[in-house]
Amino acid sequence: MANKLFSLSSNLKTGFPEGYNYIVTPNAQKVADSIIDGYRSGVHSYTLIGTYGTGKSSFLIALKEDLKKQGKHKLLKSTKAFNDSGAFETIDIIGDYKSLDTLMSEELECVGDEEHIIDHLRSYYNEVKSKGKFLVIFIDEFGKVLEHAAKKNPEGEMYFMQKLAEFINVPTRHVLLITTLHQNFNAYAKGLNQEQRNEWNKVKGRFREIVFVEPVEQLLYLASKQYTSGKPIANEHHFKKLYTLAEKTHFISQAYSLDTARSLYPLDPFAASAITEAIQRYGQNERSLFSFLNARGENSLREFEPGRNLTYNLQEVYDYVVYNFYSYLKDANADSMNWNAMQMAIERVEGAVWDNEQDLLDAIKIVKAIGLLNILGSAVFSMSEEELATYATYAMGVECMR
Image 1 (spheres, rainbow, N blue to C red):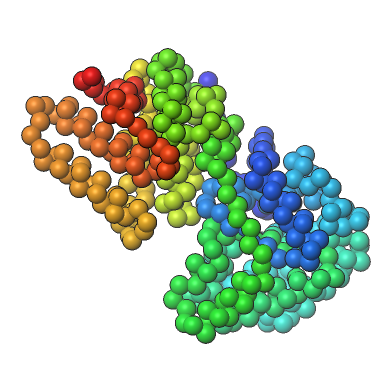
Image 2: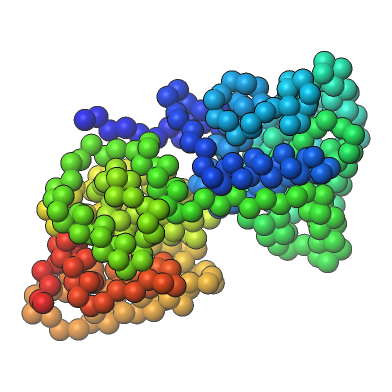
């Protein structure tokens, strides 16, 4: 079977790649409903906040296609929720490290200062309105714009953002502004003085924030619909034991089905949940679950060769996370102490006396697994020594004495 790769080329301007099947999740539907309800109550500007790889960009594309009646996604039960005619025009902006007025002027094909750009937008809006249409402005990757604003010209760029939001938020206007961020608006204001922060907060207050969070199990389900390694499960009985163990210890929830787990092989259920959680915590806008599934090279899933008692396991996840997110793990964060403790434990294992090299390597595998289970497991997760031995045997190929 040929490998089926994700296309990473879909974006707000180009849309979904051919053959891509967007799945409306409960979270996506909830966000769409929140925008509709908010507009009916007079809110016109929104910021969708969610970590990298949770599907915010895909949501914008699906919403845009629903508005223009090009898709069958059914995020909107009726486009007349915004406009009696159900007709729309969109302005599609993909954030970059530029000022927002520059990006807006490029999209509107106009030149001039901030006031001129707003006037041009007003003219464009009136033209759209005269045709009986509703205007929606999408700004994906809005965080890049905010980072640029904070570093280059906070006062000037905040002034334009404030003017834009004021234009959008006039209650009688048939217009929406929807942006996406990877973290809270204020997180981009590092380094600003108090006066600048006050202006920053004024702009923030003109947007309604909507949290865009897909559960780990939902992300894995979405991934399973797009991914196949083409590698058959080497030992179905052992793989099912790993799945049952992950459920029993509450490392995964019942929402993560065995069929989904099989589709993501050679990832085992523990590793699948752990890598997804780790990427959300440490990815820092550079990695997603989908880029992990597509990656080639060192520690990659694509080039991993499973065996009868060998899956892409927690040790592999540990190595991938340390290799790809090393700088973030070294910075101060909520998990820093745990990662440092794990490294010290590995060093102590390496410094001990072992009968042979294989025992040393096996011990390191188990220490890495224990560390990840402790860091990434939920509050209800619990695993006995015997259960750990089962995992080590069937996933890591470690011959444990029982």
